Length: 223
Image (cartoon, rainbow, N blue to C red; front, side):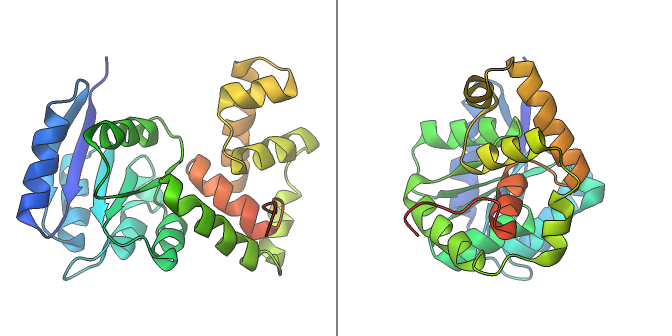
């Protein structure tokens, strides 16, 4: 089993040490380093090449959102960022995802939830805390009142089936669920997802979901 390498970025030493102890006790997960602020996190990512960064939002020197943006730039696209914060404000959720984060959890998550989150984002899937998702969808819905024209042009590069798969990704369906919905093999669904990401220049499923909402391809029901 491949070990998931984790970097913890938080300005509070107790938080860093606590998460380190908890995650190091989980099978298949190893904490390879700690960072005291966003700038330190960017430096440690270059030095240690972790698979997942647990990133606090509010830190001195450089905040977590800007650090996420730098870490997930094209030259480091393989690194996944999981935002951890005590602040569940809409602006943090949305800006973190736009910056390139693959998931978002509050710090009061259980050990099981934290370990699960690390494994999910390391595998390239999206993860959002349930109590945050509703407000996030509302924000996407507000934005899609006026879809961005340049983004809509990029949708035109997709085939009809790929556009359909993209909308299902945005609804939170896994590859297996997409395969069931479209009555195709799971590997076929996975191939469609990979082609969508490549064509649109997106790094993972989370960014695909953001793209789908921003273009207005998907409009949440009830908003």
